[in-house]
Length: 299
Image 1: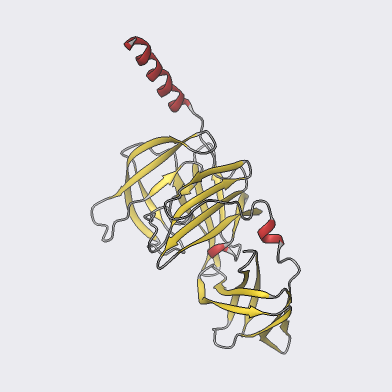
Image 2: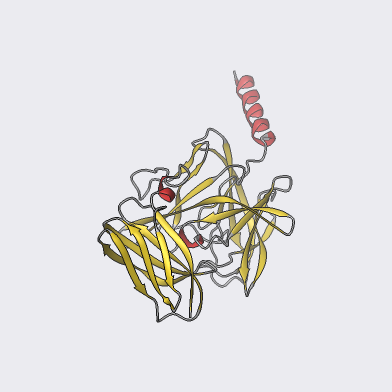
């Protein structure tokens, strides 16, 4: 009997070792990030189309802090690496976010560009790799890191093969936590649900991969006054409550979201108090959770 048990364990270990790499960007994907203060809130971001730059094909991020569509991801399956490209100081820069070819004991510099964590998070060591079966029936490797000596404020990063950080996607060196900066609660691909953590939420539900959230506000028309471009009219709104957010073109929140009760018709805004430059204004329908975002130039 013991002989058969040992043979079974050996077979399982070979299956795990021999399992092919599970890509992150082979399908459209959707991440749900949840954080809690007095209550819990979940924001969603997702891949939304492709773009080419410097000979590489990237997936464009949209939603949450990425509504500027200037955060691009690319993946090399052979090397099991994922990079992020984004505009910094008027030119695009690329950062290595993930290297899923790492072995226990290897080290890597954690880059967290345009995130709540230090951009150069310092050098971390891979402590362990644990394989777990997720909702799609596949074994995904979980990577657990620890900080090296000299890092003033060490984090506890966790990566998941095929998903990315359990913190923000562009913060591989961040600690996933319900407090402060959030933790991944749900993850989908077009083929179905992959991951969920229901510690603080009741359930997961797909929001954008099916298109409902994006399409619900397609009727909106945005006009800027040609004589005063800081005056904006948003037409085509239904009656209801909306949340407006202003972001820099790099995806940083420039203004705390504000709520607006709207009757059917037009909404007029005057944005006089912000510095000149390009911004992204997002209008979120609080009932349907659909949103519309558009670029504006302020003077």
